[in-house]
Image (cartoon, rainbow, N blue to C red):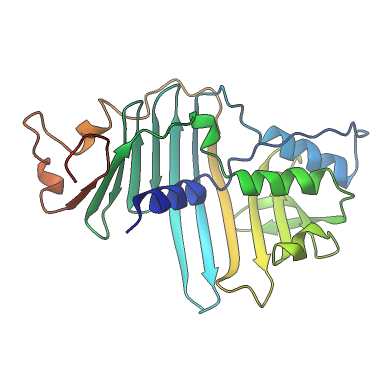
Amino acid sequence: MNYRYMFRLLVIVALYCNFSVSVLAQLPVGGCEAMFRKAYDELRISADDHYAISYSIDTELNTAKSNKADVEIKVDDLNAFVQYGDRRIFRDDKATVFIDDKREVIYIADAPNVELSELRFDKLAQLQDSLLQSNLKLTCSSAMDSEHGKTTKVTLGSANEILPALDIEKMSYWLDQDGQDIKAMKLEYTADHPQLKTVKITLRKIDRDYQGKPFNGAALEQVYREDGNLIDDYSQYKVINTMSGQPR
């Protein structure tokens, strides 16, 4: 298995809601579009932030299969921790350790030669930038359900030309009762999408001033003892090590 591909895939999925949005237009206060743009801008996380995020991703495939995973992300200046279901990433300035419990495999690599702020879902961020800088065609309506309570639901359909180009039929957002914060978003794909039917992200918590540590010790210490052997929890796991100067 290609480690780099697997690592990037996990980061992309796990950071799905970590948007980097620049709202350029100055909009009047009030109105559906202005409320949506303001709430979306509030979701932005600065590259300099220490932050912690937790949310869930519900994915429905065209095969009628579905899965749900809880996601947790913690980031400071040098370290990052990502948990996506039964997969975990520990990243510091020397190494990246990816643990896949389902496959009982540990992938180890050099720390990516990029800043943590670059480990974001750039394609989705670009989509949101393009969408928000376009002439939005959206509707707002009151919504009440057991999951989100009383919300304002914002719906963007295929009349927004950017969406069909990405095989997206509709995007929905649920804002809190005051219209200040986005609580959830859902992407509904076109019928001819090769894999996906829907993806829904439900935000649990965003801490933009996270003062804790993403994890204790070094990244490699999450899987290795001082004597160089795997810790007991991972003694039966296969290790794929691509670090420079390390045995494969």
